[in-house]
Image (cartoon, rainbow, N blue to C red; front, top):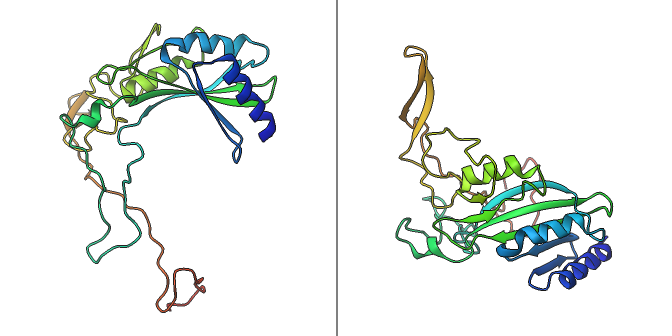
Length: 234
């Protein structure tokens, strides 16, 4: 399978010279990063070229790469006060990382039933403040609701989409909740008020909760490399 996918990666790189193609032999995954200006042309070729025949769009999603690659948690040790918080903290509105290039991306997962192989196609929006990517609804109709979801949750605008509006949040919702800099508190929630007979807004009632990763510690008297026996306290 890996050799089969390696040939696909070579064919993609030969056909799309401006794209960046990577192949992970361990997983057999092929990822192609195409310039956003060529996104629709690349999509048509991937669908219509018999050598590729990616006729099915399995998924399309948005990605926010803000602070991507920075260590977020330190879990090698802990104190009596608990785990450390994020290693890097981003200030929000005035933080220059918010405007870093290649922050927002759209990722398509394509399937070729004819050749029995999959492809991950990724394009980056050129702007951060107002990310725009062309729509591929007319190429793969299944992209319709996927693009609406990416618009709703990440604020990525899809140029040419026939009905680009929110799909998961309320129509009056402010912001895009899957962005990395979206605040976790300070917003309102909606509920139906039976006394008023309508939907009302109120302060969020859920208490903020920070999840922490689990660190498995060795039992007393053991080194981390030694297995622990079930039913013993050490």
